[in-house]
Image (cartoon, rainbow, N blue to C red; front, top):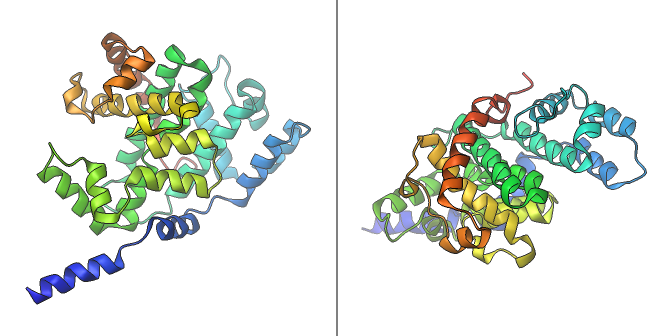
Length: 302
């Protein structure tokens, strides 16, 4: 009994805080210096395509990821994007910004320790479905958010990946707890009980730590709680929230909403989404992701 209490106390003392985990992960997944410089150039209306291309060329691995993402069905144009210059010309600066962020974080994820609970391949597969479906849904309901929610869907579970790689015992215990009480304890509630925060809070805090756009931070932070999102960011968050559920169904090849994390009924009404559209998006998302190997594979540039 004494040993058991001592073990529980040791687990309590050794648990990280949200802030400490964000800082340690921020160092581990340090975004290359060139990315920050590219962001600054993209913010400068007087910068040229040639300047951006020269700067990005300093990181060939990142260039390879960006171009593969640019040629994926999620961003496909009528013409092949075979250079950074063409990516800027065909996709525009804001889409290039999103591609650089996605590419940098995809590249950085390869630095994470290997673990079996959430292998990178499975993580990126679900993320790919969520990004593709979020973009498809945005094209129907809020076209101006399509680029933002693609990236938000692609990165929405980043906090979950960090938990399983950096705090595997606590993440596994939370997972087991939610399995033992599925009707009363959600996975997020189990994480909060075990750690004091959940993977969505962690993902949002990491995005803020890296200085990512507020809309993207909100997609990560509130994708399980869209009703709590800031009013001006509720639309992109709601789109990613719905897409997350549909992504689970697409992976399972199911059309039963009971097989996936629940969607807030108010959100479906607010977006004006009918069940027929949901089923159609699953089908389209499956076809897209079959062709988007680059979104599933963190070793794109190998």
